[in-house]
Length: 444
Image (cartoon, rainbow, N blue to C red; front, top):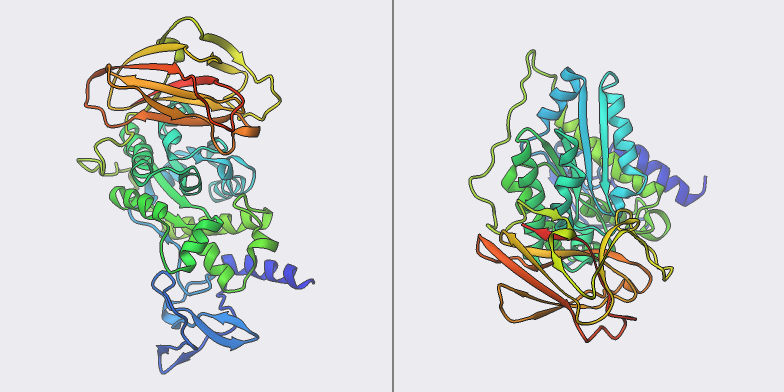
């Protein structure tokens, strides 16, 4: 077998059973022993550079060893666990499982494997699986579309959610990252207090660089604040992938390949989720198990989190000359699109000066746009205040009508407000036009 192929095979075999130590495993006098220490910390662990064929080595005490992990510990936190969904699946023989996220959730791979694994664990259970992954989506649009794409299907027993990659690559601020993820978790629990949730943090090169400096990426810190507050199990796959690469089990370039993982990388993700489920459901069910509501904290982390976020029909706005409503919009420029934002209703203005108004009740307002090669600048005012600008053209817009949730004002006082929005005379230097295409209005 080719060397790289052998590494991949052995890693996957050890992900589910057996212990991996990259190069060696030594215990001297019952204490952890390391080679020459390197500067820095690896998430609380000092690395060792024990010289075995030039490979890094993590040396752990057997009492702390975890099967299938390189440094003798797991990457998940179970917190309040997943007992409710297990009772539903095992005793009621039915269950609804939703997957909310971006392209890593949308694409075939780990999600399909988890679905098959659940069917294997509960062969008599009738499952309804919801794929609510949409490429490019982060936690902000996730919060606003949660009701439409997930909760509208009925009671959700188990929700898998991920947004760490897109929250950081899309440039969401710390405040937005908390507001978006807390909006998803708290809204889901308000709709059904018995819903179990698994929060995942996927890997990308930027996060790996931060982890290799001995730090935790800020987006993971922000999401973990939410997970801890609500007792949600979480899985740090960014840390796991980084440490397995450091342990020389595989490489990013040849094996994992991209933040959209190769089939090998998808298997790594699945095996980690599988271990989390194994641990959560390890103990036998009680004789008469009961589904119990998860406690809901009296107050959110941020009072302006997107807990009551929703999508609003664009026809609820008042619009006149310069705007047109298209029942099934599609681009004429050949640029790419995303599902749900093509052959779908769209309010369109393509020249400067088109104005609309929208009255709403809440603390936040925005527009969900398709930002393509000709995306313009939106000027907006709330309650007659000064006009501000929002450039809708993104670094990806040149070849894609990118769905983007633009929250224009998220810190309003509770009550009724009016948004005035118009297309600007100016435009981004990279844009070919002044277009504002609105798929949904946003209100929290």
